[in-house]
Length: 335
Image (cartoon, rainbow, N blue to C red; front, side):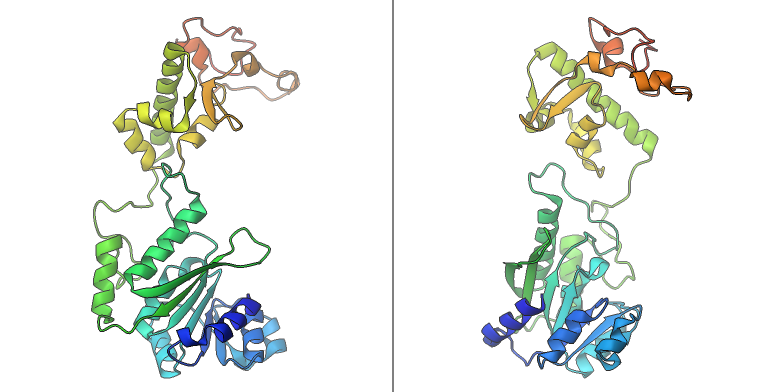
């Protein structure tokens, strides 16, 4: 990462409006701060907990402090000391905030997103109907923030031993519309968040909150989805793809599924005894009921076996379950 930054700064020096003076926010052990400083770039590493390695690299390079993007103290530190670049190397909850902080303090930003957090500090919620991965959706989310804040965006792939190797270099534009009120308004209009609030919880009613339904409620939703697909597969006797399964689900079930953290594939995988998803063919079919028998290991176990999930074949298949109640690992009740 240090090699990349040094090469970028030297090769694209004309992209920076001011001489580089960096702050590494959430610097951890401080190695990146030390390496960049050793190459002649003035900088400071900040973390909420001091590391032993700081004394080896030079304690003057570091500051032990809570990093609060709302803090006037942090804003004043950046502006008064004329720092021009913020570094977010796996900055976790700070990641979506760094473009905001940079925009308020007239800085450029280097971001290497890793863990997925939104403005509220909660896990970023993905769209399960989207064909892209959670990582790709989060990168798009960060890029959208940068676009809204009017940065020039350069996106690149690092040669590092990690699958999360996409980085952003965000360059500030000369803009007359960079006031705090303007930044607040743009983020509120696009994301429904009030950045003046400490945790920036969504304020717009239809914004997707990261609240999760109670387990019993979602259990009922999952059961309804599996029941619907199970009946459909019996009636039509044809396999389904994930996309076609989404298409045939009633709108009510689709909406309930969208509000959860798991997608349709996750729901199906949790009911393998009823319907099966083949990872090779990507097709959904009825499960083989013979595979639902109680194993010899379960029979020999001294623990009492409680059957909590219903046997879909016993309850809903016209030919019932080929296994007896004693043989089947699932409940043969309430047919």
